[in-house]
Length: 405
Image (cartoon, rainbow, N blue to C red; front, side, top):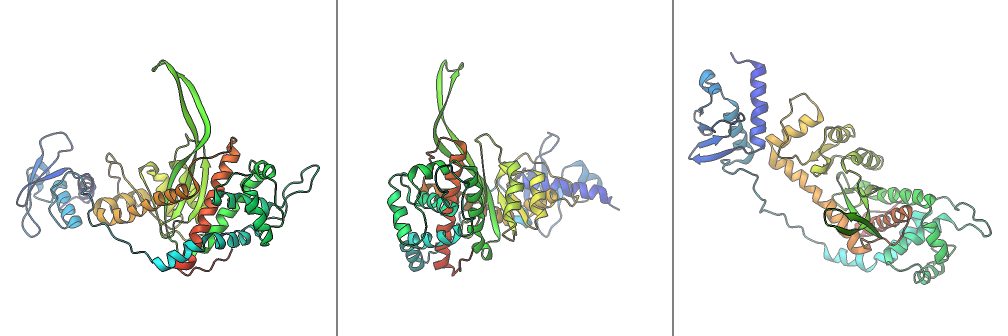
């Protein structure tokens, strides 16, 4: 009679061998599996319906399926073919997505007009005025944020942007036209930072009805400042441009930014994930969250599962098989090991977050003009809000979404 503990350990080791592809095809129904102890590879024989054989001592003594036989059997079930390669194959059956060109064209032709109307309704959710400025009347906070987001969209200098604000005032979209100095000064305000964060969250709400799968990643925005240091290795003065890092959670259907956090360039990605997904869960029902290897940790897997979602995080090649202890980490790994194709299909939805950053930087630029960290963060947040409104306009025409803040 087989020992249950020994059988469980065999399965754990087999899952690790199958996940890391430590075997090769040696002929018809014959394979060799690497030895974890560094000895010569073990020879495996057998097929789907025939008897299995292995040269390892465990199989010779018990005549039961050893971990090497189980590893080959798992790979056969997972891939439906003989596992003859040492690494996962590159996908060649890329899915082609069709574009609803009539709806897309309408969305693009009406984007700026619709964005200005939506931005007015969005800013109306903010308090009425900013902090009092000595010597002059306070400018409404809604008008300041309206101007910052619209300026991020049109990509003009503060002086040349004044004419756009006059047009918006004439159309009844704002009540006060702030001067370019006022706009730049408020752009470095913490009060505006809080308001833009609120606008970003509110702008994503109308798309909560179509988004359930999300991806997490970060990207940098360069500044106008340089960092200079003396390098003893090179024997000369070196320079590099300073930048800010933007962490986002984005929907994989519409590329809407559900939550964002901006940090310095040296902040690690992994510790940011729990707060990001928790913020997004306040407005969205999370079913899946995918992320790259930079977010691989047990804490992140547990944080995602605690919100009712399933984590799909890429594993590193040296990740060891965990015990089947019922944790989020164990469930995620064994799904990856036993059914890798399904796991990778879900994981590759993460590519949409790369598309989101590409959309933002191509449309609104990847360089910041402000010199203060708060001003730089506000520039990025204004671009994220503008991006969400553009996504919402396209969803109105293509998906029939009714925007309501």
